[in-house]
Image 1: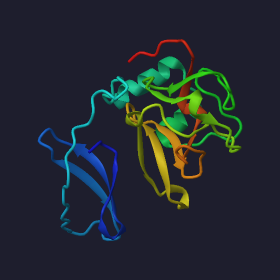
Image 2 (image 1 turned 180 degrees about the horizontal axis):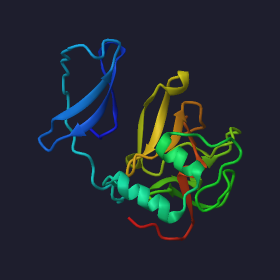
Image 3 (image 1 turned 90 degrees about the vertical axis):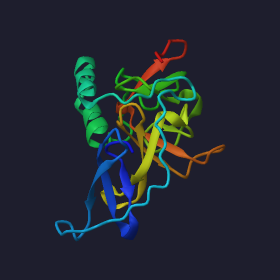
Length: 204
């Protein structure tokens, strides 16, 4: 289980993975009305899957430590909006977003959108469409291995959050109201990405 992942438990409870050990054991923090009391939970482990080291499209998926991410953010000069989106699950204002290289949210240039930290390819301009929402919208990621989707109950609603698989950076949310062939709308913050024009090499 990835550190930071939220796990849905019975009776509406949620637990956050705090720590994973080499022997497969893990520590979780559970938010519940009975928190603080001595409780015993029985959790059935259905399947243990080794996380992929390399995606199906050939990109490294090893998680970048948070300290390294912060260093890279400082070195590349990410602005306050990008830092808020990536590290604090913030949202840029609609119709104002720009990627870390300055590409506008509504750009129609051909190329690849990579994570602003770590550079993992996330979305292609081929899959981008105009949703009218004011945020870059895509109907599919470049590679499903490159993103993590998880339930998000913040802001008084239930949504599906989208994160970078290499860094855990918050990207945005995915909704079931997109165009064919997937019917999905990946609503992504520009500030969480960097645009790489078609023809430029992207390190694996």
